[in-house]
Image 1 (tube, rainbow, N blue to C red):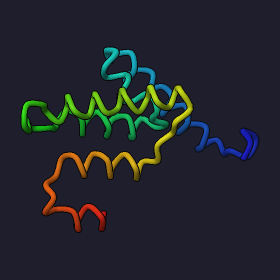
Image 2: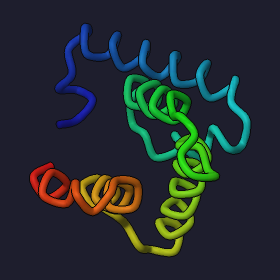
Image 3: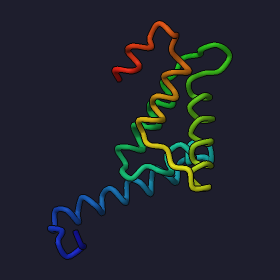
Image 4: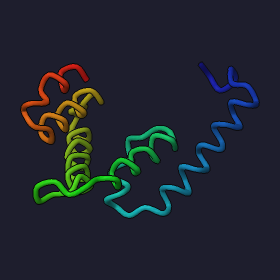
Length: 109
């Protein structure tokens, strides 16, 4: 689809999304930015930040700290050419956070 194929409404939505992304990114520090740099929509950015900040302490690392570390690593690997599918990321997080007794549920997810 080319830009000529978009309706006036589509272009308005695109413009609003771009403006919202700009304002959101301007208020973030480097750690926060590394979490959302691969997101394509403002909604995806917001959801990613919300998930990162709703964690509770587990072991000696909070979910926020673990997610930040994980995202930084996957982003660095992406810059080196190694791209992970979202499904792979979710599986890696779930298998390391949840107990072995959850294995069948992890597989189902």
